[in-house]
Length: 373
Image 1 (spheres, rainbow, N blue to C red):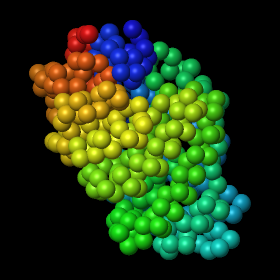
Image 2 (tube, rainbow, N blue to C red):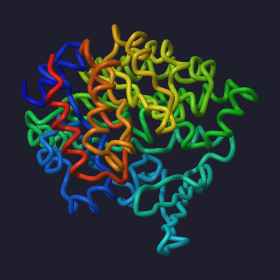
Image 3 (cartoon, rainbow, N blue to C red):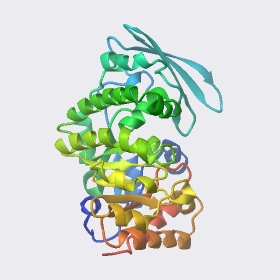
């Protein structure tokens, strides 16, 4: 089998020729520090890895291309976006955004360092402002031609992935990025109708985005997000405010011919049956306790394995940053025995990493080749 066939077979719940081994994605910091800025296609070929290529292209761009892509930073006729840099030093750079609409002004602050970017001031301050998103925020257009060119470049090295725009996959995840996680959790108790209204607005935005993907040669998109993990919310909140909305985005993606992986980069054991109800094709990142999660691979396989493929479970800190060949092999053996032996499993790092010795990553890929079905 080639890399692509191997990954697709596992995603269908089958047994490929051997254990697939991948990573969740290459962070710019890691690529620049360890690989001289090589792009993800070159890096995956360098390691002969079963590649998950994360790629998306837009015909519309945010006002600051260096920030991670969010729709609220893309200007439109009634959504005028400007920014000021309010701090720029050796620690980080802070952007203050102003979004002018016909009904008022929103402000948002983001900070970034050499590793990533994050929101420090959320744009929605008052409940009625959620309607401004619905009425005025533009929906960026995907660049189908560029996406399909990336698919052709990828060839048989793996699968092409992206996320369900806007911030991350799930509607709850996006809502947290507009309002703030703590504030939104409190609102589920104080004003649940308002939370559902916000989630419905986000859902409509996502469904229109998904419809615009027809013709894009994407293998899989990511639903869910860390704010929906059991590290952040409870099973009852997940059941009421995540599952009903994420089921609809999953169904819409299936309608346009794209698989869905449900992403919970945190604790997940208390929500396994609920994750199954999202209708997704796969579950990730199966974060182990030493990485801040609570994944029990054997229990996850027993609960989800008949309905969903599994992706992840490898401790990248112990394996890539601090690993030895023996320690890496031991981890792979554990993943194989607990989740991989019966197929439907793609071993992968449990989310992104910033530090990782290339030789350890090569060992990880090479050792996995010896675990054959």
